[in-house]
Length: 156
Image 1 (spheres, helix red, strand yellow):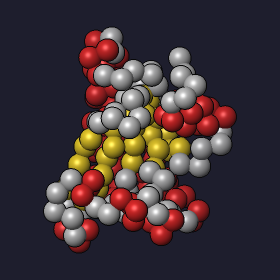
Image 2: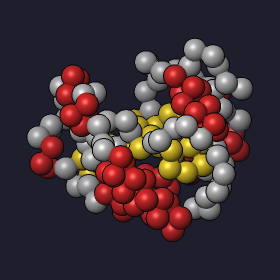
Image 3: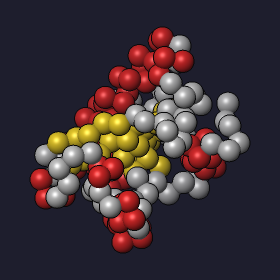
Image 4: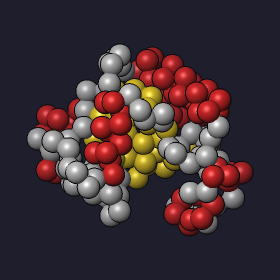
């Protein structure tokens, strides 16, 4: 069930309406989207279909599937964008709806610690927003890698 003032629920609703340009794929338990801003090239999110604030609130079988799918999404991100390291984050302090942040990290990104140590203004600036062409290429690359690892639903 969607929660009206939840940013993640609103983004999922846009996926269902076909108006979220960052949408890549629907899985059994969640939606894969490219991040709006790409300071860390290949930044991807995995949005849980259920509006829950904590992993342990999910029913056990659903939770296990969600975590397995997140792992496959992370593998696809790694294979698509070839980082030196991949950071996984499930925070929920700002948006209290389960969603994973998958950050491809590279030696060249110059930040030697959590991504949140980066300049916050730069992380969310238009300067690091992908162009339509870049976004399409990223989505295609990630979808291709996802298809190798997990069955994808063709309709959101």
